[in-house]
Image 1 (cartoon, rainbow, N blue to C red):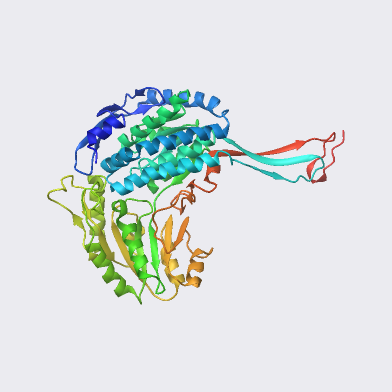
Image 2: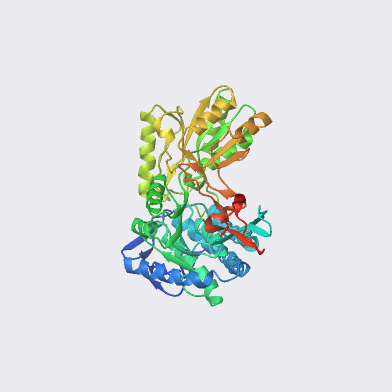
Length: 511
């Protein structure tokens, strides 16, 4: 295990660092933000954010870069992404450790996040040779009708603290092979991770003699997000974060008729029927609820358990929670690390209080941990509450390890109705070995979420599938499948290779 100073040196991060970069030099004239580790409360570094002039200069460079970058053949752009993937392989251990230090997720999860970056690069390399349209039959003789996809321009990226490097990579890998350039506003809670990523990609771009502006990072708070949202030069704004933030972005981007890709809140549920393999269900529920200290957008927030197995399952769940080890996330023996900061701890405490006010009873009591090894004040006890499905707190997403257990009676349709009654629609799971139940869950009258799983949990989406959700999750899709189409503009083409000019629908126009 490397010391934090060694990590920063290896990743070319200064303890006092400018937070803006377009490909050659670090700059920044805005306010300072400090990065404190939730692991031990130590100050990792200080970063200077973007001022208005910094922003304008960066966007100007991105505009110019796009004019030449779009002309590079897609497979050659894919070669750049391949090289990025190789650089990430070299830096996997260091970058994964930095993620754990700055964000607080376990080392295994930090390394797993970097592996996601590598995986999306591999996916995008293949994709660079498959950006195909479709040919259609024309109703007119000697005509050809087809459609193709073109780059959009500048893709803005707003990412959240919980996946400080992976979300950037999901967007840039696809955006680049599609011919776009990218401007990234990382979370102000994890600025050092973004600096590390920019240093890595800059090596690739400089090795290939490419111009400034293809990859840009602009550190800052909400003001940078506002600039991106309102800027007509940003062809697509991909924003990951809270539903509140997403609504603000959507309104501002929509006001200028721009494109937005939103990945927002999740209030994810696992339905456990009497036909479930309870051992599998238990593992899925516990990891889904406490992984990343409950700070994944796909974290399990609700367990919907049939009354026939309710007592057995809750007793076993209580036993499982007693086995959880909470502590330094860089120690592989620990299962649960800290929340990101004290503000998140306060939100967690408020939610615990609301659970009691709204009639819930705790199967596993929560609380803030104190004493040696918990000096940062960010370590909390994962909590489990038995509560009614229709109380307000259950319908809110609390970004913390609080799990609600809801009892249902009757058929799987009743459980699905409980699952679907919340406003969020990201991830969902059904635990059952009964085909009628599983197929009902996956039908168009089943789960209303963008992700619907059978006999696995709500967390751990694979790169190959399109990632995203419905309702207040925003409706966007990132990563695999045909998510690349969001990063391109679609064009329909008609070619006439005859000597005549026949019109559609048989219209005759003689002059």
